[in-house]
Length: 510
Image 1 (cartoon, rainbow, N blue to C red):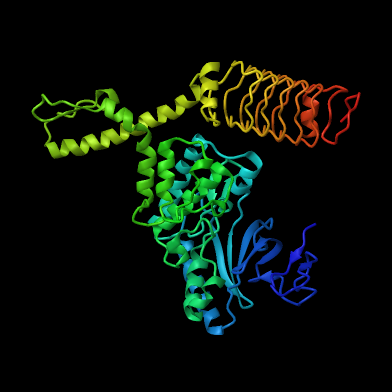
Image 2: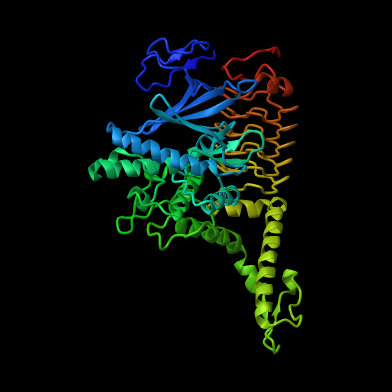
């Protein structure tokens, strides 16, 4: 039921009838700025609260996000300073225009409080995504960085430091899967920094300066720089590949560095990049997003470049042989300086083309049983985006393996232990999973058409939005599994199938 929610922080009974204009309990106005009605609280903290509201001036009463300033200050002068700073920062955010940053629709003072009105994004944050779908592998984390870094680069170009990058502040938009960066700490930190100065250093602990575990030392000292966002992004990567908050890792007592490396299974190249993002000393960290993007783009191709870029020592003009990179001969009569610039541009273009080809080939890379098991026994557990069609892995112990978006058609996984494995978006059509251990396994958006799961243990498995057309679930254990009635209609079941409620039925009725 839709309600009208009172935003007075001291109101003990904020829920009201949707047509009321004043709160029944405290008498506060329920219509903000003569325009917005709040209908639900999303969250609150020491600084303020976030709500879902409706814009009553627009046909259809569209939903929006209402953010209320509640600075922890009783001093009138401090509050006046806070509101002034909030307004200044709001004007800065008002200039931001990026398709992956929610639009700032309005900002105003009302009843002694200050409000931001923003576009409401329909999506799930990455913190919840990891809890529901499992951790990222290397390919997924590279995809994440490729999409999020341009957003951060744009922000910094507008002289804005986000100050609160973390998984909970990155949404995956439901309609297209794009990442959306939300909940800027810029306003909050500017206000609280000034309040801390006004009230004295002893009050520092009262004010939010980012999120513990994600905020670097200089930000906790209220001196954030652009690379502070890069540190927070690195800490976010650690969460995405481990499922653990950075604050839960041990710290090197000599350097202050997070000791997270033992909990991951990624390439040494990517590990070094994240390590540099997390450098405690800003002088050792990537200073700009461009530096980070360059490291992510070039690192995988350094070896191929050394093999393909050949210095022709016999040539008088020291031409570079770039034929294997497809950039041609650079001896066109220009000066050597011009050729050097041209070479650099062409090399960069060739690197990007090669990189795109390599990413496309990841999906078509073909494995055999011996190669797969050797990699697995050596510690590899991330097989995202791989072609594993037709492999015979029967009886293997592959629990907690990651197969996001992999091609697994006709694969033999009978009697295999795949508990807590991640098959998000994978194609398992015609796969054999008979009698497999699939407890707490994640199959969201996977294709299981014509797959054989007879006798499989799917207790607490997640089959949300999975294609179960003609999937054999006879004798399968679906107790506490996430599966809907339409999926059960599409699949094959019989009296030996255990349903999500723990029952068995000898007839198929839905």
